[in-house]
Amino acid sequence: MFRKLLIANRGEIALRVICACKELGIRTVAVYSEADRNSLHVRFADEAICIGPPRSSDSYLNVPAVISAAEIADVDAIHPGYGLLSENANFAEVCRASNIKFVGPPPEVTRLMGEKEKARQAMKKAKVPILPGSDGVLQSEGEASDWARSIGFPVILKASAGGGGRGMRVIRSEQELPQLFQAAQTEAANAFGNGDLYLEKFIERPRHIEFQVLADEHGNVISLGERECSIQRRHQKLIEEAPSLQMMPKLREEMGKTLRRCLSAIGYQNAGTVEFLMDEDGKLYFIEMNTRIQVEHPVTEAVTGIDLVKAQLRIACGEPLSAILPEPVSISGHAIECRINAEHPEKFTPSAGRITAFNVPGGNGVRVDTAQYAEGVVPPYYDSLIAKLIVHGKDRAEAMARMSRALEMFVVEGIHTTIPLHRRILEDAEFRQGSFDTKFMERFLARFSERSAERPGESERERREQQLAPG
Ligand code: MV4
Image (tube, rainbow, N blue to C red; front, side):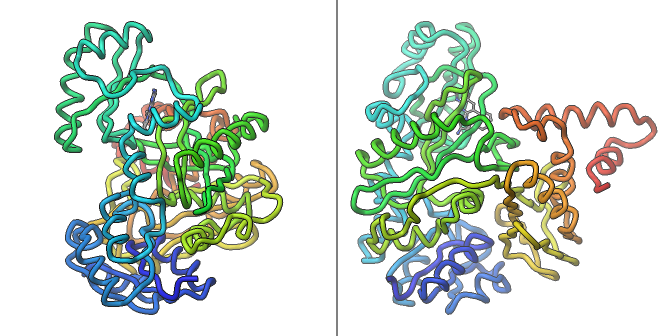
């Protein structure tokens, strides 16, 4: 096993990696920005090194600063967490050149999956279902038009260097194409330094379903089932569940086999997530692969009993899956995660500041992953996730009841959070019924405004806050 590992991240995921290292007897090195001096990842790591000013670009994203810290601390490995440098193939290459093990897939695979159109073709070649669409990147607007006509409108233009919803355009008719093609190309070139586009059939009301996989360094791959991630707003997930109510056991098993074959062929290693859209007929289509541990990994941990971060570390040390996994791997019960973000309830804009009171729920089937504490400060420089509340129950009904009571017992004062919003979602009939798609939040928020409109004499803000408030 590694002797010493550097965590190139902050917040709850840095703490999550520290937990796994402590359990495996690995010494830990935290890196932190000037805004994170008093953070728990600094406190609980064996060593901590300040790598720069508050802004991520000056600290957590500064490759020379991170590598220097790793060399000074003399670590064997780096865990990148999620976001930041986790899917940066160049960083993984620098780690390799510095003789430091990057806990993740080889840079070549990260690079392949980062080019969305190449990833799509690789999946197609391995017989993973993809949507009808262009073969390779579009060379011209004319080519886009030809593909769109042969596939049939509506279609969606996507940036090959994009992902996570950035730089996409839905095209509903031939007339719209020239303008939207130009707009998408310009946006992609500006945002990613690469204007390459591809095109797919557009699915109007998809569900977002993703498969968690683990691959060792000896060609063995396993699928740990799916997560339902359709409850999202502006491409930010709010609630994730495992398993998905929409997934038939036969399809899950079939996808598992397909993914094992495909990812073994690609030479995938370590933890990864394969994202799919599910159409109204329950068919799955590959959209993207994420080559990192994800925010929502705990729901899979809850239903499989597998510690995914420990598995990542053991895989990176060369252990085979057969030594890591229980026999057999099975999925039991139902898990739900609510992302607790520091956000204004009505605008979903970041809410930084000092936390004046903090009570974390516990009890049977409840897990909270957080690096926050009472009197702690949420800095304005980073993403707004301050805690993840994960519950596990024997079925979805028990998980929902557990989530409701845990949200009630979760106290965060001094800043705004998404806790009141989650409490309302948990009461929503459509959510409880469980057959939602990625448009759920739009409908949910519209139901809200309608009810607010029926209450004259209050400001919009007062109404919204009252409706979002507990009780
Ligand atoms: C799509 C789509 C409909 N049809 N592709 C958004 C994020 C990126 N990973 C892919 N996305 C989408 N791709 C086709 N062919 C709709 C979306 C989409 C979406 C997907 C998953 C979760 C939430 C979403 C919200 C809006 C659009």
